[in-house]
Structures are given as structure tokens and as C-alpha cells.
Image (cartoon, rainbow, N blue to C red; front, side):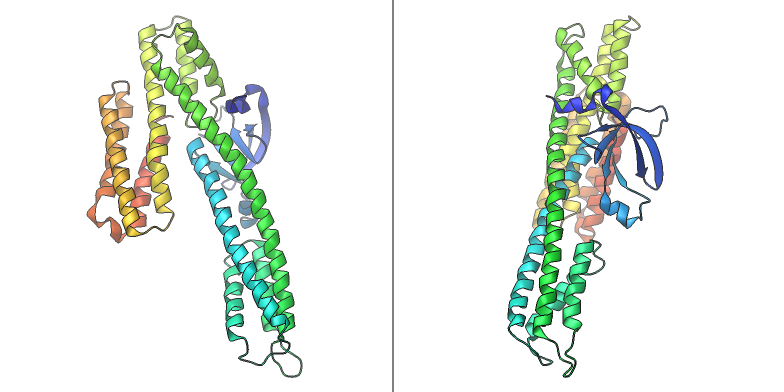
Length: 376
């Protein structure tokens, strides 16, 4: 069964969503449950139709319940976010497992140490101090904070008479901290399982949607059986950046069926819509994905330079294709050319490495503005 069938019009559900400090009541598609939904059609004209909404316990806790859902502009950004959640969870698990190993080693040593004098086991206590600080605020997770407190209690405890640290006490609290981190790792596993399934579904949806618009672009006649089948599939394109163009193409096709305009004019308009959507797909996959990855991760200068040059080359090739293709509307061509040129110029500046993150994020923002304008 196609992933797009999550957006069958009979699968609407009503939901209250707390987004950006306001509560909205909207029809949504569950994709595949209430943790990830897509805003359904609305007459409100608030610009949210077709956007993904992701439930976040962390966001709810951080804002004391004022905000509970994240709004994601389109399916490509959603795909990247779910991938980031999985990778972030994997890295966090690796770090926590290392901390657990260190706590166990420290605990085993201190359990055999008995009463300590000030200055004993300095390296072990230095390690515990580092763990305590690493898991403390500004960390927000309750299990990490509790683990930090556990380690601190053992380190701060002193024997009643000699006022010295007591090895077994520190070992017991270190063991309690390990239990806390085990709970946190189990939580991460659940989050990663959630993200992995939905990442697979969103990736499949993007692939299906892109193939559909490619098929529309390549059709030679609106009277073919295949073309009407493609139009029928547009009903399920309910996630941006495919939602708005799909509705416009459906209206154009209705004009053809009822004889309100010539087939030639309508077919040209449909091809313009398809080309604009496919341009967004290419920019999201080949440019924005790379820019966002560079802007939010630490890389060696040589790798950043290599990726930057590859990105400039990608932008140049896309710009040439836009200029050579006569199926773009003049407004779409003008917007695309302006934004692509602006982003390219920022990336090509020689002083990029003085403020690399700012330059990369600036180019990323410009292209995200482009992909938000073109299909809607």
C-alpha cells in the first residue's frame, strides 16, 4: 500500500494543537499516529495547511505546557529532522554508555577503598567531578540531572568523625547514577524507534510524490489514461511542498474537463506547477540538506571548503537548468534566479572562513525562503 494513502480524505481527525504559544483546533491526518500529524485543508488561510506537526515532550516540559507541538514547513525538512533525532540519540547513547563505564570503574575501586583521606583517589574524584558537571544543568533531562545529583551526594558525603570521603558511599551513589543513565538510554531507544519508522515513511512519501510530479511533467497529452491516473493521485499529496501545487493542478484539470480553457494553455500551466515543485525537491535534497549539515556540525576547514565548493557547483548547475527550461513561469524563474544568485554569492565570498557558521546559515536561510515561496 502506498505511503500516500495516510492522506485519504476519510482519515481526517480533529485535534487540539499547542503550537507557538497558541492553541489551534484543526483537522489533521495521522501519519501514522497522533505523535506526527499533517494539518488538513482549512478555510482559515493561516498558511498551515499541509505542514507537519510533531509532538514533543521535551518542548512541553521546557515551556510548562504552553507549547507542545513543533511546526515543520515541509516534508524534506521533516525528513531531515527525524534523521537528526536518530543520529543525535545515537551519539547521546554513546556518550552515556561511556559515562556508565566510568562510573562502574570508579565505583568498583571506591567500594574496596573504605574510608579515605583528603587527597586520596584524586584522579577518581576528578573523573566523578567531570561526570557530575557534564550531567548537571543546563542539561534538561530529569534522569541526567538525577544522575548528577547522585554523584554529587556521594562526593559531598564525609565521615562523621574524620570528616573524610567514604569510598563505599560514593560507590553506592555512583551505582544509583548508572541506573538513572540506563533509564535515559531506554528513553532514547524509544525516541529513536519512533523517529526511524517515521523517517522511513516520510522518505517513501517524498520519493512517491517526486515521482508523481515527474510523471506529470513528462506526459505528452492530458487525454491519456495515465494522465487522469496521475491527477487522481494528487488527492493524496497533502504534505507540503506538494499540497498547494496539487490543489492548483486539480483545479486546472477541472477547467480542461469542463471546457473552460484550451488544453494547450492548461497543460502549459500544469507543467509550470510541476517544474516549480521539482525545483524545490532538487534544492532541498542537493543544496539545503548539505548547507544545514555543514552549518550545524563541526568539520575541519578542508572539509568545509570542499563541501562549500560542491554546493556552489550544485547551485550553478541548478541555475543553468532554470535558465534553459522554458516551462517555468516568469515569476518563478525570477524568484529562483535571484535567490540562487544571492546564496551563491554569499558562499563564494573569500572571507567566508572569518565567520563560517554565519555565512552558511545565511545561504541556508535564503534557499529555504525560496523553497517556501515557489510551491505556494
